[in-house]
Length: 505
Ligand SMILES: O=C1CCCN[C@@H]1CCCn1cnc2cc(F)c(Cl)cc2c1=O
Ligand SMILES: [Mg+2]
Image (tube, rainbow, N blue to C red; front, top):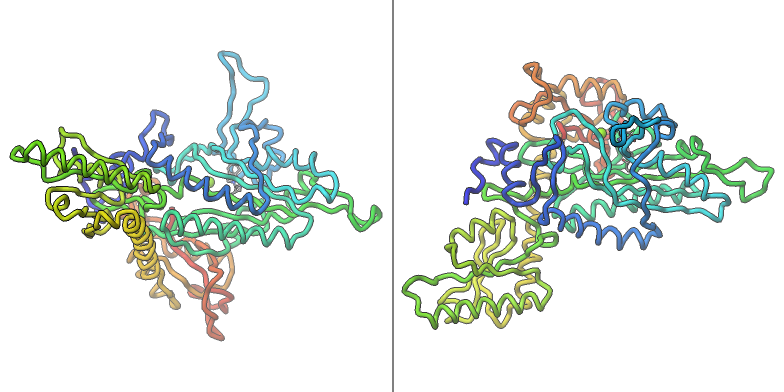
């Protein structure tokens, strides 16, 4: 068994590739930028789906499915915001060996697919609110270096699209969904996020404003956008005529819908892996681990009597059965062709949160030794307490992972008030919270001035020599009050808000 052969802190991109493949999360595919999601990662996605579905249904959202193909006519309906994206649209140009009359795009997102039908289905104000979600995949033919989970040409996501009569109702939902996204990160993936609003430069151009959950990859000191919830205003309803007669009277102006759209993708799995995994391989939070516990008989040698060997194997099998019966996702590793040491490394590589070692002394003391994957802590559990203790230590690990990741994020989210400190702080693997004037040109200046003049290479694959500058990541909803007269970190205008800046994915 060859495990991870590089150090996370020395060669992050190679480390990441090894962790995702040897951890059986994903495999590479012969179409560049496309990957195979194996059960170890697909289980994570299914857990997210179950958790999110239960909660959006309580918000009145219904799941649906729309075609993946968009005709050129329909896709270009919304030219202004498309033109920036046109290079990444994938097109079907022929079937068999005959050219198609009209080329058909593969959906990169579904606004133009769905909204003509929103217009058709919403005839009166009683048809509001319309709240549909899709679990699907989208294709964006990006040219930057692909990265498993983080930047792939096809990815799974959910895209929610809602339409309301009242703006206030729409705006409330934007935040309700953002809170659910933060819940997915913090409750399931044990990843802390900062919630905030994107600047005008960074928001979705087709909408009014974008709210976001921003994550942080401590190993590279880079921010990462983890999920977005947009308020679209009436931009799309005017373009697609999603309107109704004014409920106050036909003589009044027609009412155009206020809309939201919100999305979270399998990128979240990459963020989780990068946050928790280590040089022994994958580390999975118990809430999303396919196998939470692996039971391994130990201490059986050539000198062990047949009776003793049977007693240990039977004891381990009994532990396994009791855990499965109490809803713990447990497996046993009774393969007699491998040594315990081999098995330990194998299950560590696959990120299993706990291994339970059951050997002669455990048998004698009616106990089992639990070894925690993230910090190696050994915990003795009396067999009599199995059903209560094991769920407890799983919860402890889940909480411990979040606390550690939050501590890392908090320590590397540094307040900077003077420009002389900005780039040195950034280059120490930090993101920065700084007073900002709110001016887009100044934002561009901050990005340009914090870029290291790269050696002409194309997009840096490895983070060792970050050439890119600091983008604005979000304007945090939670932030301290500005000192009166506080100047912008970059220019000498008065600051209007704190903004989080950082190199990012
Ligand atoms: O982010 C979300 C949440 C879920 C629903 N959609 C929005 C906006 C998506 C922006 N966006 C993002 N990427 C795109 C790529 C494209 F090729 C084209 Cl044609 C359009 C877009 C595009 O509009
Ligand atoms: Mg993009």
